[in-house]
Image (cartoon, rainbow, N blue to C red; front, top):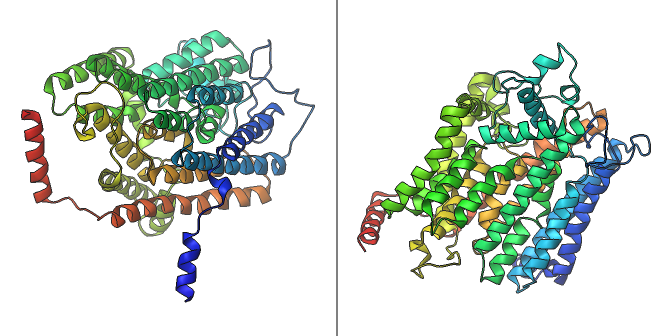
Length: 523
C-alpha cells in the first residue's frame, strides 16, 4: 500500500500555475529586471568597474557614491532572480507543450526589449569583456594579442584602458579567432582611450548578433507556430541566455550568428552556407561542430557537400592562413582547462593525490573526449526527429539535409557541452537555437536545469576577495551543489537512453546503415 500511495503521488498532475504562460512570462521579466537593477545600482562585487564616463553612452548606472550594495545583498538577489527566471522558462515551455500559441512577433519584441535593456547597464559577474577590450587595445597600439598579454604592458607603463582589466586572465594571450579579434579592435577604435566606451561597443556587437541569430532561427521555423514560439522562448526570451550571453557581454553570439544564417541558406545555397560556417569558425573554433553537422546533412549529395566545404574554406584560409596564422594555435590553450563548476573537478580531486596534478588533468580531459562520443551516440538514439519547415522534396525528416543538420548539431553540441571539463552557461547558446527547431523532448528541461545551476554558480565568478562567509558559501555552491547538478545531467541522459531501449552500436547496425545510405544515395 505504501508503494502504491507513493506511485500515485508522483503521478498527480502538477499545479495549474506550472503551465500558465502568464506566470512564466512574469517570472522571466522579473528575473531580467533584477539583474538590470543590480547593475544599474553601480559597481559592486558583481558589477564591473568600467572607469570614468566621459560622455552619455551606455552602459548607464548611478553615480558610484549614491548606492553601495554589499555582497550579501547583490549575490542572493541574483541567485533568487536566476532561480525565478529558470522556473519561468520551464513554465512557459510547459505552456507551449499544452497548446499556448502566442503572437510570436510580440513575444519576440518582449524578448528583444529585455535583451536590450540588459545591455544598457554594466556587465555582471564576469570580467571577460574587459579582456576583450584589452585585446582590442593591444591591437590599436600595434601589438599582437596572441603573443603579448595585457599585463606585460600595464606593469611597465600606464594605459587608460588596460589599467581596468581584472584577473585571472590578464597574463593570458587571446584565445579567440581572427574575426573576434577584429571586433575587439573595432570596439577599441570606436571607444578610444576609455574602457567604458569600449565596453559599450562590445555590448552593442553582442546584442545585434544575438538578435539577428534569433530572428534567423525564427525565420527557419516559419509556417509552424509552435516552433516559432519555441525558438523565441529559447533565444531572446530565454533568461538564461540573456543572463549568460548579454549580461556578461560574451562573444558567443558573434560566432553563432554566422552559423545560423548559414543554416538559413543551407537548402538553396550550400556555398553561402559554407561561407557562413567558415566565418563562424573564425570567431570560435568550437563552431566546427556546426560544420561537421552540415557535412553530415549533405553526405548523400557530393556536389552540394563540395560547395559547402569550398565555401567554408574561403574565410578559414584567409583568416587563419593569411591574416592571423597564430590564432589557430592560440585557440588550443583552452583545451586543457578544467573549470571549478564542471564534472571534471571531482575527478581531478580524486586523481591528483594518486597520480599528480598534471597527469590527472590529462586523464580528465581525455575522458571528456571519450564521453563526448558516448553521449553523442546516446542522444542520437533518443532525440526526436521533426522536419524543419520550408521548401523540401521529402516528408521524411531523415532524408532532409537541413533537418539532419539541425538535429546533428543539437546532438554534437549538447554532447560537447555536458562532457567538456570547461563549462559555462554562455556556451549553451550553440544548443538553444537549434533545439528550438526540434520537437519537445526531455532535453529541454535538462538544458534548463543545467543552465540554471551554472548561472547561479557563477554569480560570484569574478576573481575578487569575497568575505569569508560568502567565500565559503559560493565555493560550496559552485564546487559541490553545482557539480552534483552537472552529474545529474549526465545521469538523466543515460537514463533516457536506457529507458528508450539502450541501443548499442554493432556491426549489424552498421551494415544496415550502410545499405540504407547506399539506397538513399542511389535513389
